[in-house]
Length: 134
Length: 134
DNA sequence: AGCAGGTTAACGGAAAGTGTTTAAATTTTT
DNA sequence: AAAAATTTAAACACTTTCCGTTAACCTGCT
Image (cartoon, rainbow over all chains, first blue to last red; front, side, top):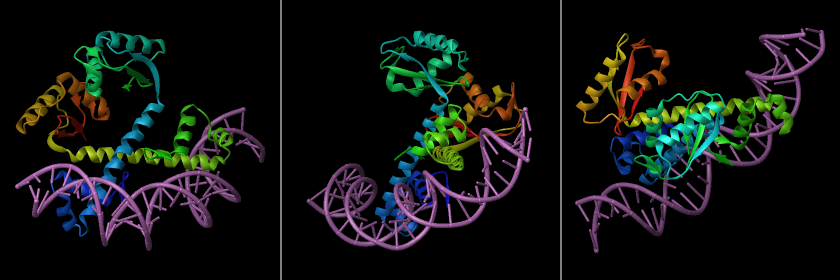
């Protein structure tokens, strides 16, 4: 019936779509209307979005806001600040300097450009030393 | 009201629990029985589990199995193999050598020890160059 | 034994989610 | 512009989830 938050139908449609089929083709295969495939696909994607949101919430439970990286900051300065704040509350960041800068670059590419932060970044630290950004 | 796949009640209970309250204390606060808190907490965790499962499924749609790292392999050898296989199908891995080894170590710590893989690892590659392991 | 924290099972009512159809509208492709 | 693909809305039966209650059970502890 259900696995995760997607129904059988929803997973089925997503698989066919990834395989490149059109909604009409899928409708023919599973014997229904193309409008129905559309709504199923849409609700499937909505459910995926919710799943993501849920995990974000869950992980954030275990996290504290430790600092804000202001717009225009240098990435190197930013990581120094992050280490300093983490030290204050006695948690060891589980990334070295390079990994940390890469994570900022990779996870929020829209917020930074080369060495400088393009937009304010909120930094959260989890008890296990993991970080996440908003 | 819902956000993600958790209900308001479920998020509320998870927050109180992370804050260290007992089920009885929470029951007193939100005026219900401790048995109810228990079931709400339980279904909340179940929903979190499903959310995780859902994302695993979704990401796996976009992934191909590229190789198997056999038990006993050296981590450095393993990453070389991964790069080679990725190259074969024309996708650039979005991690450098060090990041890659760290990811293997961090994501499946139970399957490796220092430089050597303790248990067979299946490696999957996504179209955007991201990797995941089983 | 008593107590506190947690878990389980059964049940009911309310709320939300799902698959479907039909019909109209919009976007993309040829 | 015509055809194909996709999207949207409304309505309907059906199923599932959710919150809550009650009452019992388990475990560790003093």
